[in-house]
Length: 372
Image (cartoon, rainbow, N blue to C red):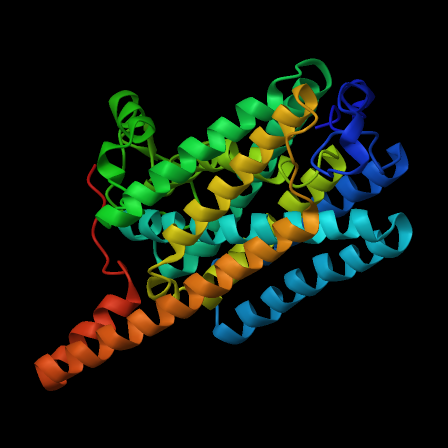
């Protein structure tokens, strides 16, 4: 990831409105020293997480809440430093980008939850799988951010491409939400998993944190290796959507990387905090579709503004207001719908109905033996 510290001045010249629209790409606020310190800090946090998970154990709510609070306080404090060091406009871009990435990371958690359940990952191994997924996502985001910066520097229709990608993703999310299939994951039919099964045998049981074991003189994969590959495969899909989304907020590769890194680092702990509540966010798909669609339109407008100056652009304060408003709305409507569903089940089924609701709220956590 040494190719990340890039500045992209050519596009700033091509788009004279860069100062007015923060999604325009210009010189990065980060010096090589700041890049180095940031990358070292991210690496140190990842190593710390691996040390914490080297011995498999069940994560208590107290432990998860403490680490979640740390990983929320850290980016907020860093944003305050960005604000004071580089000005309010840069600080606003950072906080808006972080909010977008954090919202999209919750969508990651839905898929992680279904993958973990689909492979019946033991509770004590779940945090190790999540951490591997986070590291894979960090690496992929770094690659996509570097590629995005190069495209912004040399391809003047990059904003149009990013905008169209986000609009297409928003439409897909909306369709999935309307069909109620937004987070369906058929783990048995994932291409990567099927490919692995074709070339190597898979054990019937987990062998602690080990990915492979020797059986009958032959090396075999454990189910943990399959779930790891499945998680990394989903990381690719999320990186394709996530990086253009935050480039719609700021054109600075450093801020794009920082917001992605901070949003991802806290996912492992956040998963165990929100695990029981995720199923209640039933309208999140609609909100994410609206946010990605809005940012897609913003990027298309910005591209058009470079060709036809009369086309308006969307400033960052407006973007922040729209994103916060959409998230607040879908959270409120989700809680109301969840409450109505609880009341309806309780009235219809009495004690039995309440038990069914509890099972629904717990999500797909019933353990199933992975097929080998």
